[in-house]
Image (tube, rainbow over all chains, first blue to last red; front, side, top):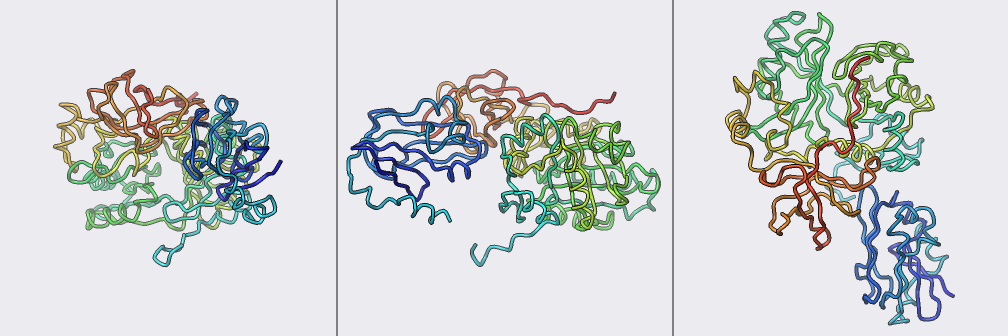
Length: 121
Length: 387
C-alpha cells in the first residue's frame, strides 16, 4: 500500500493495480463547505490530468483532475448524497473514486507525504 | 501580483479581521475577509438565526449638500431632492425626514449605473443634506457623476473618514439596543444619529441579507472599538463576504455588476418599486422615455429567480434554455442557499418565459439540467415591521 499526493491536492492510495483517490484535508479546508459533488460513472476511462469530477462549495466550483490514467472501477455515492462528508473525513470515508491504473510509471512523479507537506508549507 | 496592479487598500478593520482569523482576499481594490474560521455555510446560518457583524467599509459613503438654498429648511430639502432626482428615478422630494430609500443612478439610455441608498436626515438643521451609500466597485464613477452633473447645485462630501459596519440578523436589534436604546424600535428604512461609547454614529435600519438589521456609520478612529463592543455579545459572529453574497442571493437582492449593469434598466431588473409614483407620471430622470415605455409595454427580458431542480449549483454565466432547447437567457448570480438547503440562482430570461413555474433548462458543464422560474426571495424576508 502506497500513499501519494498531487500538486492539485489529491491523495492517491495504491493497492495492487487499483488506486483510491480523494482530496486532501488542505484542499477541503481551502474549498470550505462542500455542497455538491459530481463523480464519473464506473467504466469510464481518463487520461492523467483530465477533468474527472466536480466539487462545489457555497461560493465556487472546482474541477477534480484524474491524478493518474485509468478506468473508474468505483465511485463513492455517499459523498454525492452527503457532500458535507468531504469536509468531515476527506482523507478517509470521503474518498471520490477508485481507478484501475493503466500506466504505473505515472506514480513516480507524484509526491510522497513528506514532499506534499513541504509543498503546502 | 504584477507591476500594473495597484496595491490593495487596507480598511481600518484589517488588523481585527486578521486577528479574528479572517481569510483575506482582494475585493473591489481592498483586502477583505471572504470568511472567518466558522466558514461561509455556518456564517450564513448564524446570521439567519442570531446576528452577524460585517465590515462594509469598502462601500462609498458620502453626503450631498445643496448649495442653492441655506440648509435647515424644507426648501433646502426640496432643492437637494430636485438635484438628486435628475440622476435617479426615486421619489426623494416626498421622502420624510429620517427615512431612507433604495434607488439607482441611471444613464441617458435608462441603464443602471449603480444602486444606492439615499437617506434624508432627521434633524431640522440638517435638511438640505442627503446621506448616500453607493457600491465600492463603482464609487469613483458615482462620485464623479454627482460632481459633474450637480455642479452649481450641490456639494459632495466623501466620507472617507468613516467606516461602515452592518449588524444583521434576528437578534441584531437586541444587541444594538444595549448601546442605543432607540435602535430597537426605529422603523425599517429609517435613520438615527446617536453615540456609542461617546463616538458619534449614524444608524440606518436596513441591510443586504433579508434579515432585520442595521448599517452603522462610524468614524474610522473608533470603528475597531465599536466592532469589538458589538462582537462581545455572544450572539454576534464576524461574517465575511462569502456569506454576504449567499445571504443576499437567497433573499433575491441584486449585486451590481452582476445582476445589474449599465445595459440593464430597472424595469428589466424587476426593481420598478424604485421608480416613484410621481416620477412615473412626470418623468424627468435619465432614460425616462425608455423606462416608462417598458413599464407600459413590458420589457423584452426580465430578471427572475431560477431554481435548479437537482443539487448542482448554476453559476453566473450559465446559459438558460427553454424546455425545447432554445437559448432564452443567462444566470447572473447563482450558488447554494444554505438556508434554502439547495441551489438558488437569478438571471435574465425572455419575458415569454418569465412566469413563475415556467420549466427551463440550464446548461451546466455541457449537460442540460432541468430548472424552473421561481419567485424571489427564496427565503422569506424578515424585516422589522414595528411592534
